[in-house]
Length: 69
Image (cartoon, rainbow, N blue to C red; front, side, top):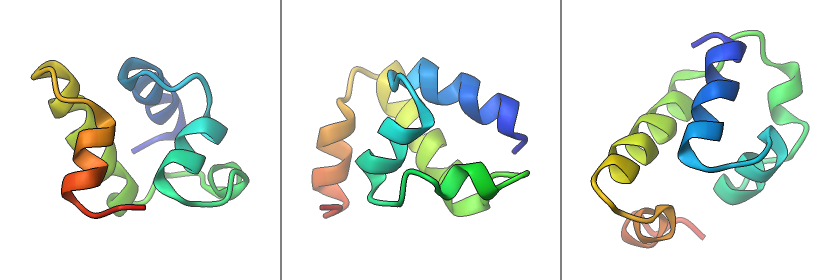
């Protein structure tokens, strides 16, 4: 996934910035500044979050179900 699409999708999920998304999934805020392409494991998290939002499920509920601190 290209960085522009990543930025668009995290806003669609409800995050105001890359930093807020990074903090929510437990990675350093500067992590995304080094990527030209977003890695597949991050893309999976975004896709799960988008699917959840479309079905009325809160991101916190997903994190809890997946046991993500």
